[in-house]
Length: 508
Image 1 (cartoon, rainbow, N blue to C red):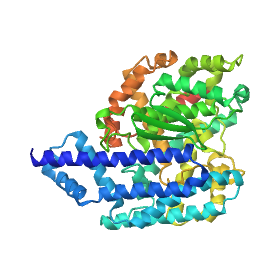
Image 2 (image 1 turned 180 degrees about the vertical axis):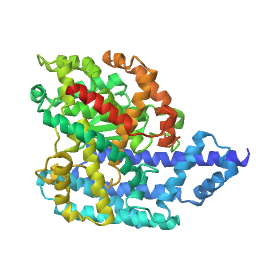
Image 3 (image 1 turned 90 degrees about the vertical axis):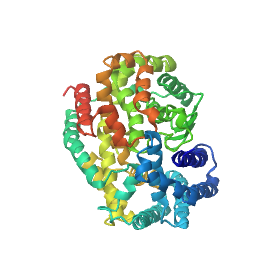
Image 4 (image 1 turned 180 degrees about the horizontal axis):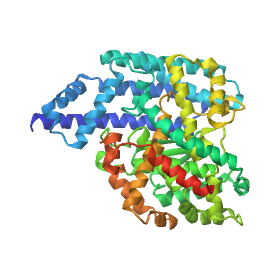
């Protein structure tokens, strides 16, 4: 055995240990969200902190550092295949993420975010947000401190914006400057379209949506649709949670939480299509990658693009409702509702204060609001104590609505309480990726709409698996998009898709 092979095999052995810790963390996080009692939050936070500490010890062990150093040497790196080159890239990012950061600091942040997420759930019931504000301010301070430690340890120049290193953790290579360019084009082309629709006064008949439907029936419908698109109940679970979220333990164990509303026939199903899109990504990663760090879906925007593809490109299309409407009608017994009425209902443009209920057109404006506020929170121009007024003002400016309470405003999402600053941009980036991928997929699959209309999703999922899902994290998002579409990320595909779709819906 030559030295390169020896070190490559050693890296794979280390990866297998790290993956098992990662799987334990995913199970604990799902349990915390879906089944654990509220009183378990602090202890569960300590458990997750322990798992993170063990992961950190493995990453920074002399054996790992020496192995990564050897394989990173130019003559060795050039001999690695794409799989191991991707593995090494992830190691270097993860080592950089913890190098120079005191373990006590990371542990405090882990425990604080776990307890704050549980506090957030309680606040939505009590309406008392004072402690949540204090915790958020502390989370921001800790995250800034962590980012500063990383920059110092790597002898890097100070970032152009304090939020840049936070964004980079989720979407590698993305910056405030790059996002601003993309977001400006989306805003320039969608705001006038949104204004035309709201000023038209046209309001489709959506009364059937609020006709009332038991959660058990909605769950049965959701599972029928999930099984059709390929989210298998053999390897998947749909639990209950305040906020829908997916936890990919491994390709054989993918769980998500959903929230069904008995006074709304469609919200839970649309969420299920979104989370199911996340799940399909994890379920279709090449099984040979399971014990490697590359053996799960790419983080951030590319993962969100899978959920957006199945939720929006598929789940909000007319062909989908020509297939799905009969399922709803059969299970609920509602009369006089056509596929076109379902299609209009899931695409109803009605700007509101809550992101997860936003229509597809105004949704990206919700993301841009959060992006603007995160910039201010991290550069110090906005304090958490002033977040209510700042949020309300931006909501009025972007959406034309003002939230009535924090639960409809800055406290509506679990992301900030969970420490997920610098994450929201992934949703709009996911929309950008999914629109670009869908445009190229349609060129290669001219019968795309007919397949959806017949409920024949296997060819679509197989194409996505062959060209996307199976690679896991072997490639960067930019490399993967180039392999699929032959182009860098462009805002035009999403804007074209929205203009065509909503122009047709509202006869513009």
